[in-house]
Image 1 (cartoon, rainbow, N blue to C red):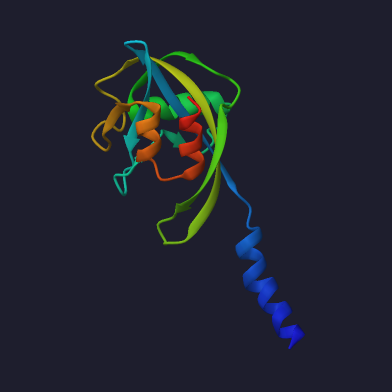
Image 2 (tube, rainbow, N blue to C red):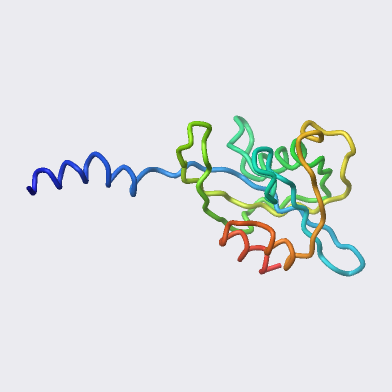
Length: 152
């Protein structure tokens, strides 16, 4: 019986609990509007839920640069400033096309938004909107991202 349990642990349990996390970089895009800070959220392409721009590492770019690139592609962000140190991190399970879940650690970089372009690579695939940090926190699903938004 113990050999059977050990095999189950090694072949099923251990890979399930100890699988490595993939890393993404995200943009927490903010602006000041009438003396109040606002956060830019976009909709995901697959489910339409509210998220922040994020993506996989890009060769030749650091985390902050990757976050800025994702903010441009997914939301048309033109930045005033990008903070080079992460504002925080959150984890989530990315559902892949085959239905499996990939655990992801997402490093979040603050980006001060100067303007939003009308034309950008994913303009026809997403909606975007500004929210107060508290309202944004109620719209995203990831508890750790909710906590980051409430810190603003």
